[in-house]
Image 1 (cartoon, rainbow, N blue to C red):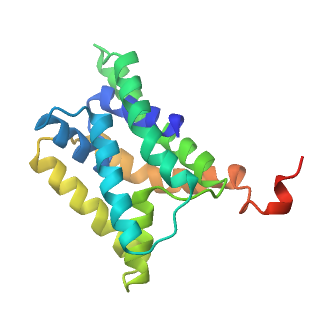
Image 2: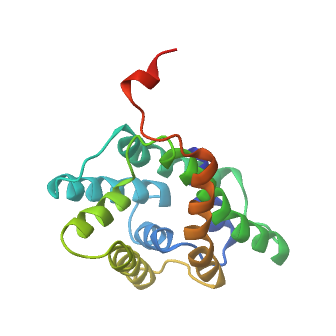
Length: 187
């Protein structure tokens, strides 16, 4: 989850646009006393409440997602300055979704619960929307709201959208450990 959050922070420091949710969190931060990371946590809590209301099962991974990604994003933004060079900013923009995909593969691969955004997606799926339609609708709403609030978008947003899905799928292969069963937990 820390690697996931670092990917979000790196792409912010690239200043060339970021994923739909980070556009939203940055937009919220622009109009409130919240940092991007704190906006990520607040959004996660609200979505967690929605997923619980929809009776979507959660796990420790869901709760840790809400608690850790935002602070990891803020820490990365604090630690890594925006490069002065165009090449440096482009490198951060390119690396961001790759790091997030690695972090996604690691945290999803242990099957301890998806993040609240994924929970919302599966909850909508259980109510009749296809996974593709549910995910697109959620991302589109987050992106549109973020742009209206002043979040940064650009070529990095397109890059994010092209890379994140295949990247997560690729990273799940080496990190997927299957659901943890009681017999698996013995030393």
